Amino acid sequence: MATEYLQFVGALVLFLGILIGSYWFVYAPSRGKDEEEDQQRAQN
Image (cartoon, rainbow, N blue to C red; front, side, top):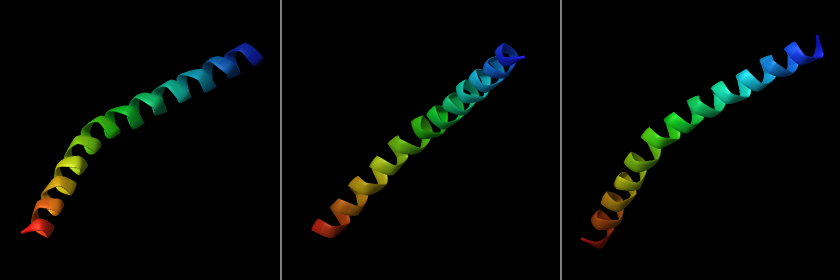
C-alpha cells in the first residue's frame, strides 16, 4: 500500500515538474525578449 502511494506521488511530482518545466521553457525566453524591448523603449 505504502509503495503504491509513493509511486503515485512520485509520478505526480514528475508530471508536475515536466509541466512546469515545459511552461517555463516556453515562457522565460519570451519574457526576456519583452524586457529587452522595454529597456530599448526606455532608452529612446
